[in-house]
Length: 117
Image 1 (cartoon, rainbow, N blue to C red):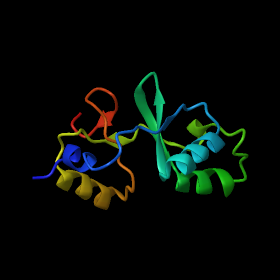
Image 2 (cartoon, rainbow, N blue to C red):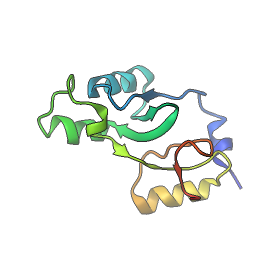
Image 3 (cartoon, helix red, strand yellow):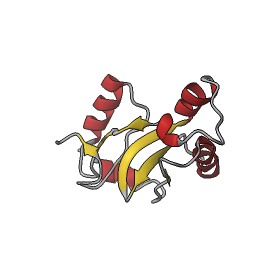
């Protein structure tokens, strides 16, 4: 059975993150720079949210908010579910399919809201 860790072994080992107080524009710049569609929102090395391009488009731009002055915390998905490196890929795929997630944070135990609490 393939695990999250197995899948991530084939990807660059980087964590793209932004502070909740950072402006939406900063999150978008990080997405562009790293060619990703979502970034983790962290505070004191803890996952507090996730923000995607869709969040920026729908919750900021379409809502008439200014990306230079709107904090990420206003548009992020707070306290997202996460998985651990040892979790099976089948669990992740099932969660993404049933919950409609496109992005699923992977965190070490104790650093986010995981499925096992």
